[in-house]
Image (cartoon, rainbow, N blue to C red):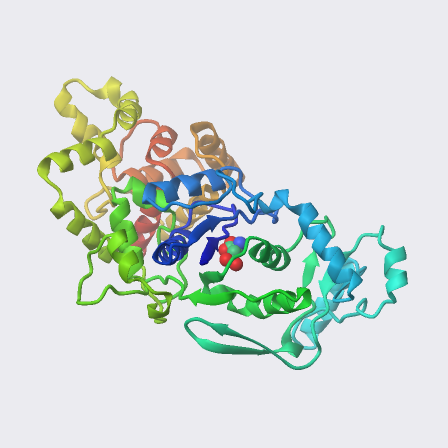
Length: 472
Ligand code: GLU
C-alpha cells in the first residue's frame, strides 16, 4: 500500500514549494490508489507562527488537493501534530537510551559555543567532540534530572548509504556525520528524530521530499537501523529555482500560494504549472488536468534539472485555461475573483468621499485591481537614490517581519521606523505611494496596504526597487 505524506512546518506563509511537494505526493498516491496524508511538524517552537497551518490547509483545499488523514480530519495514526506526540517520542527515546544507541549529553550551551569557536579558529569542521558519548550508563541515569540533550551515537567509521528513487545509490562517510541531537533540553524532539518515528508509525511507504533533505537522510537511515525498522523508499525532488538558478526565495519571487490566488491565477493552472516543474506529460502537451496527469504520472520520470519558477510561463499556462472558458464563465470568474462584494466594500470604504460620479471609481481605484505597476511615468521627487533604496529595503524588511497585517500594526511599525531613523513622513510616505500604488495621491496609506495585502505590497516594492536601481 502506497502511503505518502507532506510534513510542513508552520513557520510562515503558505509556500509554493509545499504545494509542489503536495502535488507530486498526491499524484503518486492517487496513481497507486494509496493514501496521501498531512502531518504538521511543529516542534520548533521558536519559529512557530499561529495562522500558518490554517492558511496552508486553505490554500491546498483551494488547489483541489485532498488528503485522507491530517490535522484537520484525524485518522488511525494520529495525532497529526507533532507537538501532541511528545509521549510517543519519549517512549522511543527511552528504547534508544536503554540500548545505548543514543546518549545523554550534559554539555552546556556555553561549552558547545566555545568548542564551535575554537574549531572555527583552527579551521576544522564544526561538530560535537563526543565528550559525553562514553559516560557510564549508571552515571548518566543518576544525572538525568540535570539539563541535558540526547544525541545519536553515530558510528565512527564505515559508510551509510541509501537508494534514492531518482539518483540511485547515495553514500556518505559516517565519520563526517555529527552525533545528532535527537531530543532538545526542553524535551522536544528534533526534526530528525520526530520525522523518522512518525514516518515509521504512520506507515509511510515512500518519502517524497525536496532535495535539501538529502544530507539529513543518512541520519534518518541510522535511526531506522537503530530501531530495526524497514526503511521507506526515498525520492528527493529537485528544488524550484529563481530565474537566475538560485534556490527559490521570497526576496526574488513571490513564494506564497496566497499571492497567486490573489493575482487571479486559477488553481488548476497553478497545479498544471507546478507539474511542469520537473515532469512532462509527453507529446509536447503542456496543458493537462490533474486527473490526466495522475494517469501518466510516475515518480521515476521526474527530471532532475533545476526547474525554473518562471512567472511568465505561469501567466501563459493560466491564459490557456482562460481561453478555454466561455464568456459567461469568464464574467463570473472576474466577478468572483476581482470584484467580489467583500473586496469592493473594502475599496469603496476608502474612496467614497472622493467619488462624485460612478465614472470616478476606476480612475480612483485602478491600483487595487491591476497587477504590477509601470513606474516609467509616475512622478517621484527623488533627490537621493541611495537613501530612497535604503528606505524601501528597510520597509520591505519591516513588513516581512510582521505577524499580522492590519492597519494599526502597519501604522505603528512604520511610524516606529520613522522615529528610530529620524525620518519624516514626507521622506517616506510619498515613496511608499510611488512604489505600492504608483500614484502621488491616495487614501490613507496604511488602509490601502491593509486592503492590498502583504504579498502584493511586497512584490510592488521589490519591483520599484528594481526600477529605481536601473534608473540611477
Ligand atoms: N518539516 C520538514 C519541512 O518543513 C519536513 C521535511 C520532510 O519531508 O522530511 O519541510
